[in-house]
Image (tube, rainbow, N blue to C red):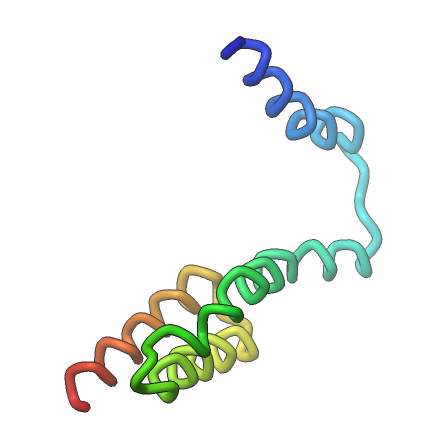
Length: 95
């Protein structure tokens, strides 16, 4: 069962490397694929932004603004997350 589950998850990950080996993707598709992590991050986190702290809605908005700003400037996903965490830590410390 475990080996079968491993194959089922490995094959879809391996196929693009085998099928597209040596091929150059069009610039439009490269741009779309470059933005997938940001879109996924936004879809997963955005619903929780407004309900992060029931007493203080600005807490979630401050974190979202920091993340959106860093993403808009083209920062790496890790930098976006760490920047948002830093802003929220400072927000919690000073308020």
